[in-house]
Amino acid sequence: MMQTVIMGIVTILFTLIAIFTVDKFGRKPLLIIGSIGMAIGAFAVAGCDGLNVKGIIPVLSVIVYAAFFMMSWGPICWVLISEIFPNTIRGKAVAIAVAFQWVFNYIISSTFPALYDFSPVFSYSLYGSICIIATFFVWFFVPETKGKTLEDMTSFWKKRK
Picture 1: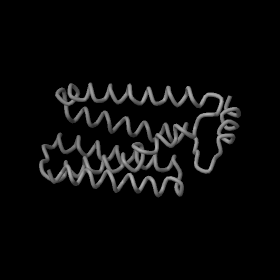
Picture 2: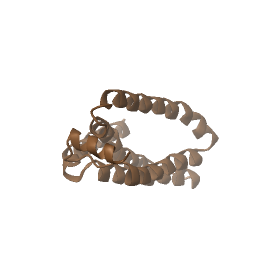
Picture 3: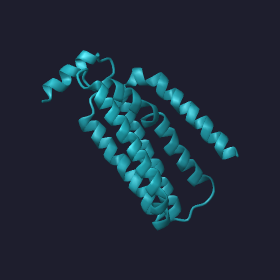
Picture 4: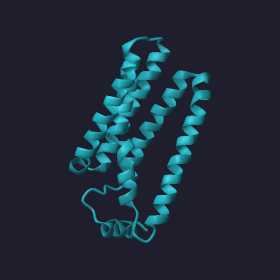
C-alpha cells in the first residue's frame, strides 16, 4: 500500500515538474535528461536483480525510472507531437504518431512478461538500452519546438528536404 502511495506522489510531483519546466528548459533537454534517468533506473533494476539485491534499492530504482519518465516522456511527448509537424500534415501525422505510441505500448505490455520470465536482467537491460538509444535519437534528430510557431516548424521541415 505504501509503495502505491509513494508512486502516486512521485507521478504527480514529477509531472508537475515537467509542466512548470517545459517552457523554461525546452522539450529536447527534458527528453534527453529523462532518457538518461530512465536508463539509470532500468539498469539499476537489472543490476539489483542480477546481484540478487532485495529491499529498498530495487524499489528506489523503479521510482527513479518512473520519476524521470513522468518529468519527460510521459507528458512531453504529447506536447512535442502537437508542435513538431507542419500544418499541411499535422492532423494525419499526429494521428499516426498517436497510433504508433499505442501500438508500442501494446507491444511492450504484451512482451514484458515473457521477457521477464526469460531473464529479468535482460528485460530491464533491454529497456535501459532503448533509453540510451532514445537519448541519441532526440539529440540528433528531434528539433526543439520551444518558442517556435507552427510556421517556424513548417519552414524547418521545408529546409530539411
